[in-house]
Figure 1 (cartoon, rainbow, N blue to C red):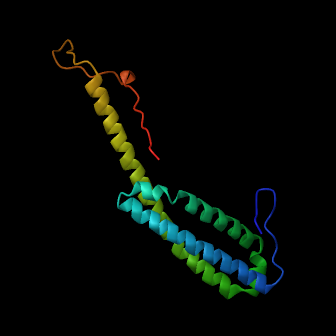
Figure 2 (figure 1 turned 30 degrees about the horizontal axis):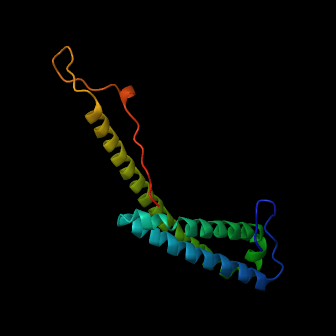
Figure 3 (figure 1 turned 135 degrees about the horizontal axis):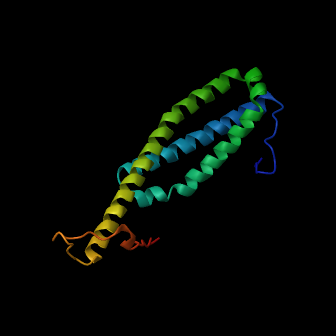
Length: 158
């Protein structure tokens, strides 16, 4: 059953249905882990275009994982009462996912900061070269005012 913003997650009526839900969450989590690991490695090796191509798959798995965990939350009491072992196994799998996700976020933030620094450096250099070379009253070269900076535009070829 697909959940959307207008419907609430459905209740579980049997242990078999609970096992299916837990298996579904585990499968989606495994797929999400695979995509995140792949993205992390691609970004670490500077293959940003290939990493960007994973965005749709990552978003799909993340959305499915969110919907399934919402259904887990609604049925937490039933699952604790009838399938505590299965629920603990899923919790352990999720606990292994957290540091992987943190590493992914760190790699992405680092790549973002590096690329932002490169763009700022290029923009500064272009503005410095395009500014008139003049001398101030002290006989030293003047630097252009920050308000005189020209914007830099990037064009992405897809």
